[in-house]
Image (tube, one colour):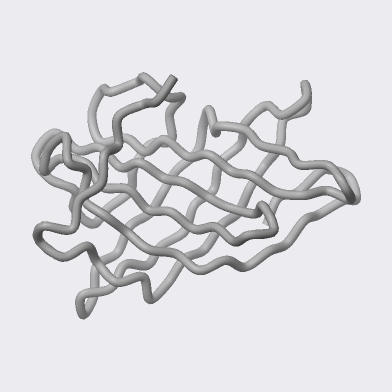
Length: 138
């Protein structure tokens, strides 16, 4: 859910999956999207390995401590919108080989501070060897 105070709210549900980052065992990528242009991308980074807990949402490029970079893309009427979160928290829980949690962040989109509340559940944890490149692309 993306909220625009005082009235507008965009709600969407998209399928999610998770992968380990090829750049090292201390990073994981959670991605959720659909062909209509809605999506969430979360890159978890931990000094040792990605573990259950609460991660601080940071801007891309901030690598200090356990962090999560969160990007959100959504449609509002006929226009696509997207932003990277600059503050908030990302919770991760591991149970029975599945990931779940809650994301509460805000970011600036078109000069407006935009809060998001995201829940995810029953996302299969990445298998050993299931890796993707998490390197930033120009």
